[in-house]
Image (tube, one colour):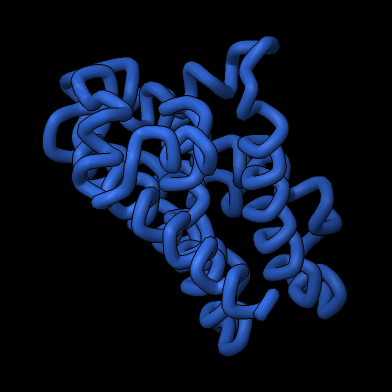
Length: 203
């Protein structure tokens, strides 16, 4: 009986997150009300607040489901990595960008705003998601370092490489002129620069 109750609770959580995601995408985060989410999920407002106390926690759950998909896609790359580390990082960055850029710009903006607020109720969870993605990137790079294809260990390289992704996403949510295509192009180029190095060749 306990197992059945837990399954029903999980199904309700998934229905609420799915409804919130649809409305956030269609109407925008700020314009969407908790009452509208409850109505779309066919539950009472009291039930919604019992599961998710604020819109921010619903947004976090929506982002978390997207990150889970990104991790699954990333794991496929880890299972059969390209021969060169630069190609592997490009592939993993592409999987992460598919997830992040598939979100409405406003949702990314709200997520970053929550992440930069020290008093944010969802900050620890957002940090946890970052740690998952960073950990997967480090796991990807580890074998290349051990085989001698990288001159620095994965822990050092991952800080630089992950910061490329985060920086470009911040620019994307900050500048309306930025596009998904320009973000992908910039990330690709900067990863190439990171692997080629900044030091000029001796003449």
